[in-house]
Length: 472
Ligand code: ARG
Image 1 (cartoon, protein in one colour):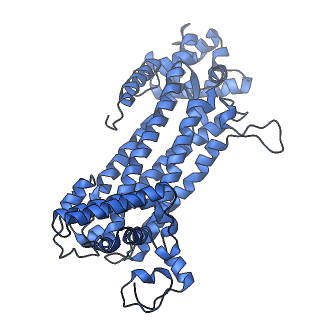
Image 2 (cartoon, helix red, strand yellow; image 1 turned 135 degrees about the horizontal axis):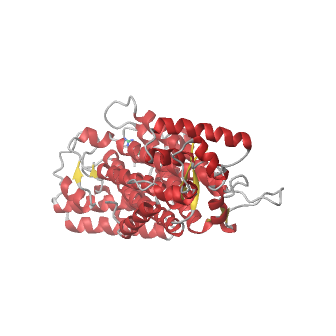
Image 3 (cartoon, rainbow, N blue to C red; image 1 turned 60 degrees about the vertical axis):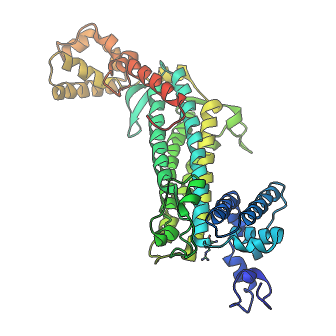
């Protein structure tokens, strides 16, 4: 400790410093308030580093044992709530080092040989994110399963399909749900891809230029489960691309969840009435006794802004930074932690919502597709199948729809004579062809909503999701 220096992290600095930090600046500078989140990873990284130092002959074996024991003691203390560093410790790295020295004595001062907080914090962040990526994948998979179970239950339920939020064509409900499973799969693939670049080890890049200490970077990297090491020490300590990449991938997850959330909110409204929210996942109003509110999907939709914001914040933080480490990087943590926490929580909330928070109202849904003009395209297709050019059929059906709207009736309410007047190709089988179930069944093209096609997809996904890996 520097002689005469009181207060704050000054104790960590070299004797160059004569004065302690201004108390406000000390708090302003400190990251301990949030980077304690990296404690486990910091300990893991330090343990690997200590072992490597011994195996390279930089420190003695017994010294490494003492260091590792001390670090494990800190882990235990933390688990028992007895490791509570304060502002004066500045950050998790200093806090651990100080406690270690207090526990094991002067050998603790050897731990920081051949490394810097710059490569240390980069290592911690990557280890932390790697674990969290695996966790998010688990929750995404759970949401996929919840959606798939609903799809399985609703293989024959229909739902109006919309474009521009105008009734377009009837769909098999399972097909609609499967669309989200596909989106989530792309999300999982993107996160897996992010993981590949997260899993590269910067440790040993030291402050920025490497170290004269004869370390073995590959050994620590391997011990910590990294796939590779950074080839360039400057890049190693100043790369935060992985934080941006994660936030971008998480933003897309959130965007997808938000779209699904929006649909649930609409479906739960009196106007749609397609789903019933269960008491376990809905809330009441403090004033209006009749209300049951879809708070869960609303919160998911609302929380998107945080994750999108973190993406923007991180990009802006990196932009214009000269090589190598800059303190700006300390700002990566709260953004990354919150982007992760928010995304993970929203995925879990949506999974619970689809597991037990809502029920599709089958009658209402099937009935909804009966009473609209969403079978108009099928009248045109009917004529096409009988040799009428599509554009001509399209014009004709448009005129029929207008006539029906004027008369206040549906297509199926027109008599065969009326149809025949419109075009001689119409026959008695038209009515059957116009039934919503027939309309859905007919869409057998690959990727279409035809019940058979949808069943195939459900079976495919059941097989895929049995396996926990992302791969298709
Ligand atoms: N708390 C710092 C951070 O989060 C650790 C690295 C500090 N490095 C430095 N050169 N001041 O970025």
